[in-house]
Length: 70
Image 1 (cartoon, rainbow, N blue to C red):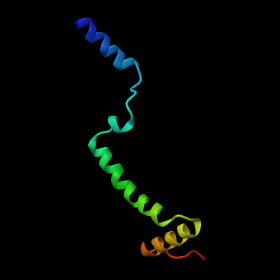
Image 2 (image 1 turned 90 degrees about the horizontal axis):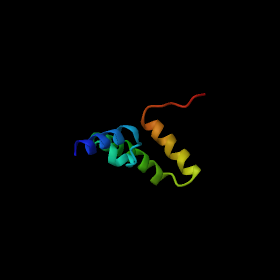
Image 3 (image 1 turned 60 degrees about the vertical axis):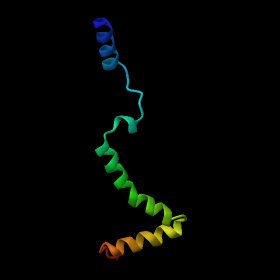
Image 4 (image 1 turned 180 degrees about the vertical axis):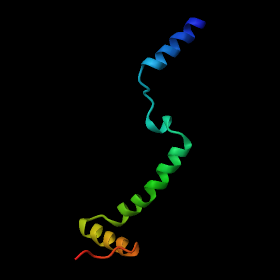
């Protein structure tokens, strides 16, 4: 029994963790990632073409007090 535990510990220490990132990340990390992605999802929904992307980006910049560089 003790030998099996030592083998499992050695295996865990030496071999790569094959679980995906969602399984390895904690709840705090997942919540932060979801919060980060909300704005990006809105951007993708509003910007289906390059023209829409430029228009949306210019409006977003104006809303956040950016001014044109001349």
